[in-house]
Length: 157
Length: 94
Image (cartoon, rainbow over all chains, first blue to last red; front, side, top):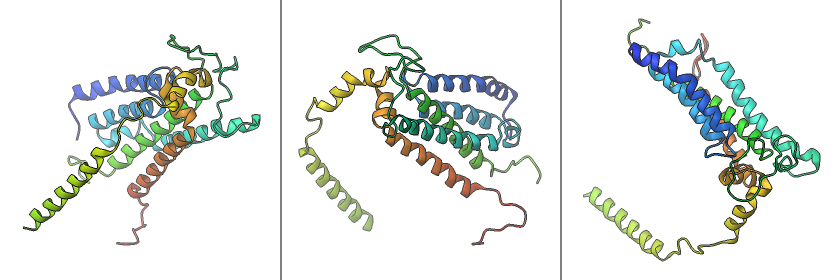
């Protein structure tokens, strides 16, 4: 069952903007409200929009389950490896050893309100991106799995 | 009759719960050492302007790892429930 052409075109138009906004929420997780979980959910909403506007069979050519499974596993592995990376420095698991070192993501932050810099917060952007990738893959694949069983009433089996 | 009885029991239990809960101190103490510590030192120690992110991903990072694992397990369960069987396979319980 398909929606009208207006709805389909609008969904196609909004899909990349959904992804870009979700990516923004994920990457700026340590500066603005949001973070990995919220941004991943926003990105998965883009797929939900496409699923509402189009039939399931139209989507599968564009969004592949295998890529999403890889996304999910990669996100969790990225989170774990970023957490484990501190033990090579003699620090405990999940220790934020990259903060305020002056290197990658290591700019020092002064106390109080400030405009914010993307190159801060040490390990937190890496963890945010890992969780964002995982939530994107996980929620999208849940949507695809649940809607794959719906029969198309107009199509003859 | 039975519905009225159950409703009465539920109302009495709910009232008792509310009576007990009314005596519990809520929002006390108003100022604790813990949240002051996060607000004063969170920005310098983690470098994140967003205090919520610095708590969720740094001070409580292990908890977030658990949340990510919960999502992973949920996807695993949904995938097991909704998987398409190959031709010739059948559910064992059919």
